[in-house]
Image (cartoon, rainbow, N blue to C red; front, side, top):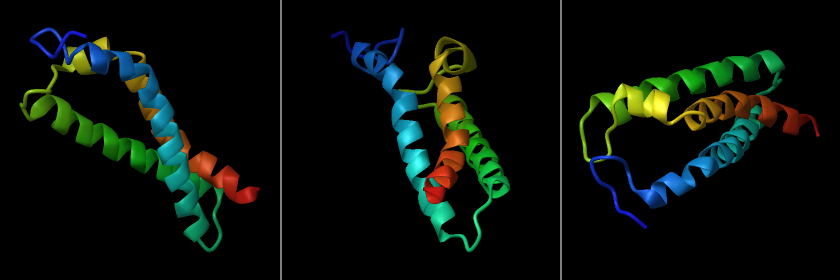
Length: 108
């Protein structure tokens, strides 16, 4: 496999991109379930608000951690938000949906 260079993060990383939304939906649903289980009376409204907060935090941290702060793996806005499609959008949807799935698991 080709290593990281000025054109990308490497072939190995590129091959993992389809898995990023999957592990995010698993992890954020698990932590959503843990969070909702800890509430006295979990509601779908609480799950929606939590999903919005978690997705918002991740979006802000991503723009700083992957775009604005320069490091060997940093990307441009285009590379992160356009070239990384559809994966980045699916990741943010997974993060948003995690608490709602966690809420649904509390009902089971």
